[in-house]
Length: 118
Length: 114
Image (tube, rainbow over all chains, first blue to last red):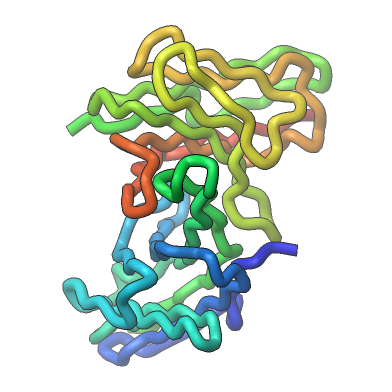
């Protein structure tokens, strides 16, 4: 099975509320994590990333938290808006030792659909 | 900016036919990737290319062929399409393929094999 997965396949929130999307990974060697947003009919769009030497990173209205102890990643969206409705998925980078870790395999999760109710 | 484009956006073909999906990027990125996206799976890497004339297999390469004669183009060919290749195909590119390098995705090609 895949090493990256999501706890909830769907999430429905009220406009203005905060959203939290979770992701579990199983490879302790993963050194880099990315959250993507994918709107219907479009390609994935980069939202935010975090390196394994960090536990929190903030962007505009989004925060990613990394808990390496339990291999858990979360995406927090503040003041969720209708335009945030999309599928969100995480990806982990597993470095390839033969390249000294500079290259890696990017493994994608299946995604969580976020629906924002006006 | 133009970024990364894919064509066609939608394609219907029959089993056994050859199909080529096109990918073009305007950033002169060294790395390009082909993924397929299916329900119940995350994006899965088919092939990637580190530079012109350099390609390598990803997780699910069987049934696909790629080429990279020019840096900006990375076509994906299904030599004899099968129904299991019905999927949404995404092309992506990045300047490097390092641990902290972001991949930029095209809009996708939706392929139906009858």
